[in-house]
Image (cartoon, rainbow over all chains, first blue to last red; front, top):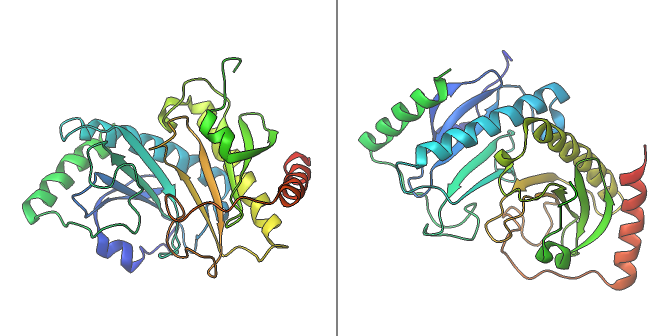
Length: 141
Length: 141
């Protein structure tokens, strides 16, 4: 795990929330959608099938936990009609999982979010509030 | 499991390969991309977090196994530069996982495949050959 280094593009597009046993937990800096990124803290992993079976099971557990937290966070922010979970990596090769809370009223519904429209950055205060709120939820026991 | 019924839209868009312990394994009838769909054979499941923890771990195992098989199948069909794995469900609510083999030379690279372009159906013979080849690979011990 010592060789893990977050890809520069992911670092530029997100704000850090915390580290979980396997993954770094990040908030995508795009206020259009409540959007979490999980990055397994393993060096040189591109595909899900590059992870060990043990890590794949841990990743599934962290995806599920993050999904539940994101859904509960959105309850105070317009709700969530569907969670979208994906590992794509066509642009940024470092393995990362997207968890996106979608609403039937959001700007892209029912289309997927990847490669559509321009990100809308959170305001500075707004980002700080989101990261604090999510930090509390993601680090609660 | 007895109440499981494949969603009509998924049935219309795919060809059946086999049943695995958790999932029905299907080939997306879109010759643009080697594309497998896994549908957990559980009734009324929409979100990943609706599955039990046991089933989520089984799903991760079947996604990994299907990814490896799809990658090896594509070795004779132009190769695979990246696997895209996703559970979206904005249009068809029944939980299903996409596993798509992507190439840097395919028609949409690096964009995602969902909601872009029109599906290109396999020819009848071509589909039968693909289902037979994949059936052999997916049912091998």
